[in-house]
Amino acid sequence: MPYTTLITPEELSRHLDDPSWAIVDCRFSLQDPEAGRQAYQEAHIPGAVYAHLDEDLSGPVVPGRTGRHPLPRVEAFTQRLGQWGIHNRTQVVAYDQAGGALAARLWWMLRWLGHEAVAVLDGGWSAWTAEGLPVRSGEESRPEVRFTPRIRPEMAVDTATVDRWRRDPAYRVVDSRSPERYRGEQETIDPVAGHIPGAVNLYYGENLTGGRFLDPATLRARFQALLGSCPPEQVVFYCGSGVTACHNILAMVHAGMGQPRLYPGSWSEWIADPSRPVATGPE
Image 1 (cartoon, rainbow, N blue to C red):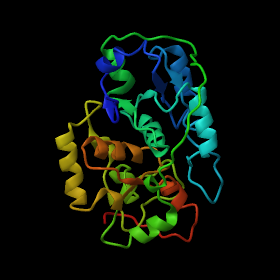
Image 2 (image 1 turned 60 degrees about the vertical axis):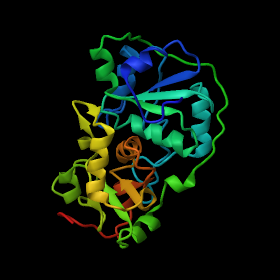
Image 3 (image 1 turned 135 degrees about the vertical axis):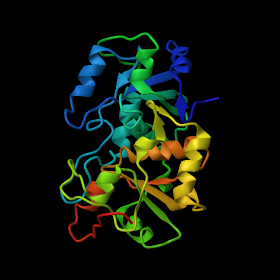
């Protein structure tokens, strides 16, 4: 059976020599975009290739139109997957140093392209090294293969859809950022503080305890308390740039609650047009 949400370090360690498995290191820092690649070259899980958030998991930024991390063109990302040795039968495991907040972006993107056999390493790099599991330095590659996308367009929504849904009580627009950023009290990344009017707040970081995901039952209770009986297809998550919102989506899927949607452009795309409304404080 494929791993489709989370995998433990022990489970992954049993497959390091399995050519049908691909490991992707997603470590990244917004403050220093080269830090993740440097950390990978110094030490990484054996066999892992490196995915750079800006270069591999995002497309070009268009000022005034896109957010900070727009989705790449399907053709470009599909080619990159092939270069990483990932085809449609590959079990993929993604990891980072941020509790899965970056690895979840790759997890979501692969599912968006119809690839279910992808999981995030629970506890990430910290859990792997804490358990004394093997590491390797330098750069690694895998034989190039062909990946065929089967796009699931229903997994993503655009700005116009978010604008409609935020006004409709049958839907939930959920901001995944910290409460301080949601309320507009603290904003160190984007030029405008606040949130999309009508959105509620569910901070992705509270899916974790001790760097690992809460158990499915606890996650389910956490999401149900906010979403009530709203079906997953009527829930859309956003964050600053469409990255950490994927963590909430991963948590919901792991909790067995179905597949909610992502607003990939997120807050940074919403505010690219100054005519769009902005709210501060609690809803």
